[in-house]
Length: 268
Image: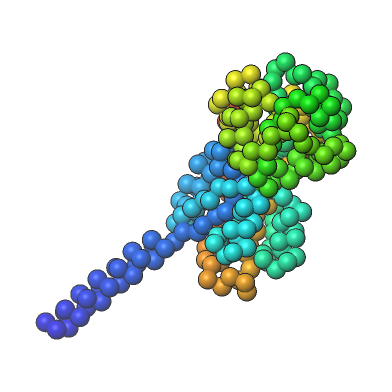
């Protein structure tokens, strides 16, 4: 009887451990609002979870905030879109590896009336210079996101230091910024994926696109085991490798909104 009871207890304990292990099979991913707002994660995460039994819990913030979360060791993995910042993150020892995953582009949005005439601009820098010259309302994320960083680089290349009543720094994500721009009839720079998925354009329309400086690369980073040994590095590496695999790259390519592909895989 005692032996039978012992085996029963061991069986119950083993089952408990299995349930606990299953419950802990998740990672926290710090990523951008564009990957969340566009619906990409809703499309690809179930495929990853089906393949690996690993849940991905997304914290969607601006890229600057995502870096800070990862720097503190509060996320297991990082997927963002600021290549220069990502390379510095590796060089400074916060991540051990960075890889290209996918890309799309930024676009310049504005009211259909286009008071600054940016639809006729020859470059993105010229378009921004035209907005500044007209002092037409411009809604900036102002949140140190990858989009905000790219926007500030464009103002610099245009020789413009934006400011004054016409330039509104909102400190908000891409979706809320688009909503504010729609309410203000303001110009705004957005990633194409969030713009295509945006459901409240009102008078806004896409006015400028196609300049090579609007290229928008996304990268996945493996965080440093030395700095943060407590993180779930083995699970995070499975996510990283899946993104770069044929299966992950196809899942990204297959994601569409209204028949339009929003992200283009380019793992190397």
